[in-house]
Length: 405
Image 1 (tube, one colour):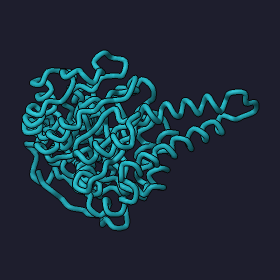
Image 2 (cartoon, one colour):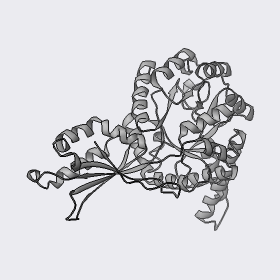
Image 3 (cartoon, helix red, strand yellow):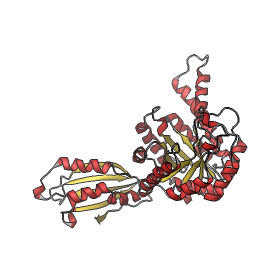
Image 4 (cartoon, rainbow, N blue to C red):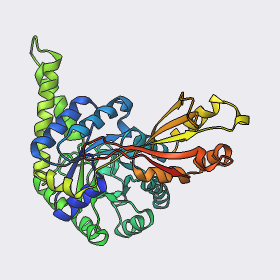
């Protein structure tokens, strides 16, 4: 499964002078179109879900499809949780399958943005998750702040240096004149500002509001450190236009035919972007230089003392507490029916990444459980068994290893 670490992907793009497209998805049609384009171009790609669009689709239904698309892809894929409204919602994004997050505090003052982002980085990095920060405000196209002369919205060089140093983000979205949506008139971008930020930070930069720029503007952005370009408005408008064209004066056309025409148009447009931004043909080298994303499953087994009795409610309480810890994706509880077993209950825990196991063991909620239920037990009554690594590919060997707390 070529689901890879987005930090590795963007670092490769940054050091090799190209940009990876991050295409925001709101339905299965867009997902299939983006993946078809990436496969045709042999390009790495970022599949993005934005919390600001959650009213338009059910993210819990779409995310399994996104994971499945990544699992069968032949090109490197990262899954990004975009414009999270809070650390809690970003944690939910990780639980759903995203391996990169952004908590958007760019509308707040510098100090508050820095504080929130720093906390998001601490949570995410403990789980092996990369983090995108945003400094400077990228407005919606209809807002007055979208004027290119509005210095207040732009990213400050001095603040960018301080922000990256204090937060530890892996990539930085900057405001230099783009907007979310379609700007009226020709966008005027502050390349000098971008160049100075790039020279100072020497890290992958991100452009939000990547639709509607000219070829030369894209090339200048990439030459000044932009390694990730977000795109939604362009492909959304294209899909809507194809929908209108396919139904205008047409009798007898089916819904599936309309979908296929829209999907084909999006595929062609996304492939154009991937080639324009220099990502085409990079799949093999990116895959060879990125860490493959490897969730992990572990087994927690437990035997209460005789005087504790069989309190099933306590077992489910443990399940609930574990489920809330960042980096934990799923928790399944069961009763061990083998009479010869020393143990009576088990929890199968799926973590997003091996680093999340360490984070779980040191998390205050887990430590509280350990003191409440497990500390009085003998050493051999509570063990963490590394059951197997996921994805389950032929290259990975199953492991059975006991690790005492």
